[in-house]
Amino acid sequence: MPIPRAFHALRRSLAIIAGAITLGACHRAPPASATPGSSPAAARALLLDPTNAEFTRPAPPVSRLRFETTQGVFVLELHRDWGPLGADRLYNLARLGYFTDTRFHRVRVASIAQWGLHGDSAVNAAWKGRYLRDDPPRSHNTRGTFAFSYEGPGREHTRNTQIYVNLADNPRNDAEPFTVLGTVVEGMAVLDRLYSGYGEDSGSGVRQGKQGPLERGGNAYMDRAFPKLDRIRRVVITRP
Image 1: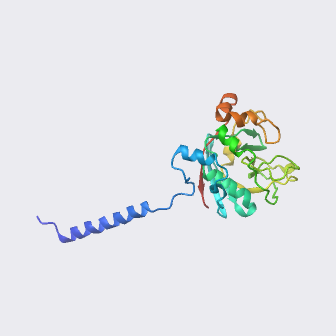
Image 2: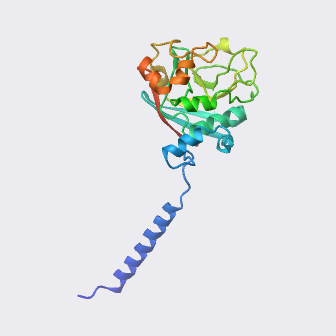
Image 3: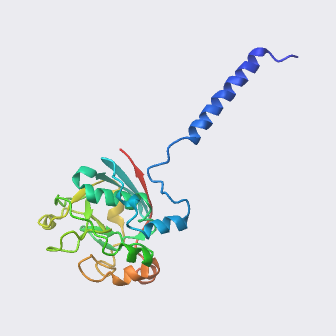
């Protein structure tokens, strides 16, 4: 029996629609978390070059950093106008994979969680001393706020790669010129669950002088000496 012409017309129309959908998918913009390198070697080469212009790309006015960890997911909302220099640094470290497979090396119950040492000792060496100039202080350390750590009172322009989140209100830190860059908007319970049994022994903060073995030994050292530390699996950039 001959096939009606209407059927052929319908089939042609469906083919055109399918082709348009495929073409649109092929030309879709890459996600904000995409990195310039397409291989682990290229990604590592970028992390070994802190002077690369990719690390100074301006962050969006507001972005969200979705941290996938061994305890679950939490999300930081980053506000560029709260501290443009710090926001750009944090956005690009997250975007370019710096925090992938890193450890929460300092967790104090009902106080703070801190991370930002890389798992590759060569990357730590490349970033050592790559300080940011200070943004204006915005030091209101309420639960869920986050900021870059720095090397201490009287040490200007010493922010680098380490971030802390306040797990409780910490008004005693408000007198110091930290620049809070945003708040946790999802997953505070995940941060509360991070392993805290090592306290200040697993590297502590940037001021205590205990981080040398972690910097030089990377993940291999941390996993051997502090095997219970929770990990960041990856970070994905989204927008509100």
